[in-house]
Amino acid sequence: MKIFVIVGSLFPFDRLISTIDAWAATRKDIEITAQIGKSNFTPINLKYYVSLGAKEFNSCFSQSDLIISHAGMGVILKSLVENKPLLILPRRLEYKEHTTDHQMATVNAFSKMHYINIAMDTDALIEYLKEPERIVSRHQISPNASESLINTLRGFIEKNIH
Image (cartoon, rainbow, N blue to C red):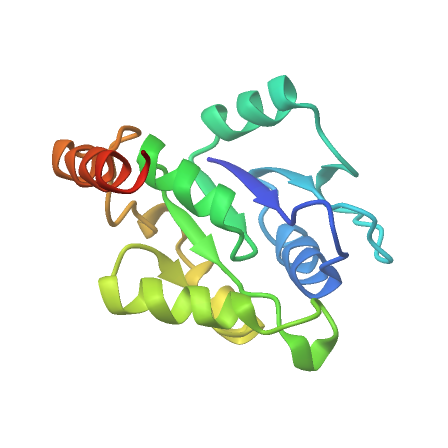
């Protein structure tokens, strides 16, 4: 099994990386690659990069069996389009992992739709990882807008642009 862990590039997410690194020490049978950003934590049990170019990122993403990430919309949408199993641990304002709690709002909205696997804290993350091969993709979306959305936008534009 191959896992790709993604934290984005704006802020460190040491809570996620340190939890995955500790878990990785117990699972030498799993290949884990992480994009850790400007982290204050240095992993010792997984392969990591501070950042990745688009080509390298897409390669890691496509070759992975499971994506573990913060609640970034880019990763969520890419996982849904590519039908990749995704496990999210949202960044929390209370831990100073972001400047707002918008990632909590994101996971709450997706939770209602049952589109993604969500671990609200590190204990839940570890619980999911007891059997990572059982984490599945819960929904797939098209990379294209629906015909009805296109028609609605076309109508709006035609009506409002003179």
